[in-house]
Length: 185
Image 1 (cartoon, rainbow, N blue to C red):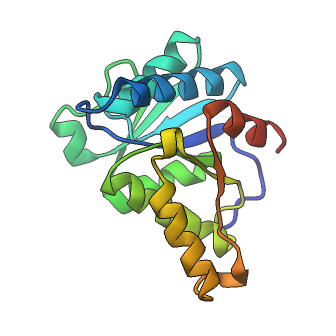
Image 2 (cartoon, helix red, strand yellow):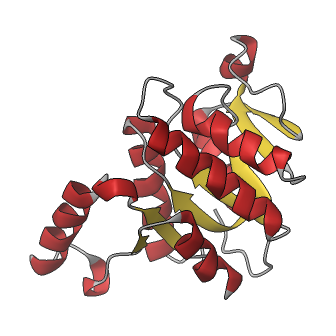
Image 3 (cartoon, rainbow, N blue to C red):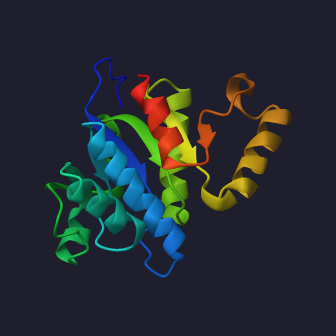
């Protein structure tokens, strides 16, 4: 991935595709999509038809915004893409999916999620640390969801495992705080 000097109009949101979660998380994802749309930016996400991904897509589209889903071909073949996406981008692999989402985005936001979200967050933090992704990386720590991960990051930093002694992400408590950071760039 090459550093991007122009500011794309997208904001990539990583989050759960599972629907078997507390409704609090679904409302946070919907609000995130709504706020991105209200800012005139495009929601870029994994494009899934379930869980927080679906809620974010619906939040953006219901607020008259755009929602771009990026899915590997095998997921589209299984019908996992959300039917209300403004645009669906078909990629050849999961790696290409992550690269495409990042290249379309001026900022990256991690909402609560599972192992896929953690994978995406770790990769975009690494790219940010290496100056391959220049936008802010934001972790929305809804209801303390990421407290244990943040504690691990603090331990990594204290023991010298974080380059420059800095965690390459900003932790906030709400979608509104995430948008305040994005609105400043």
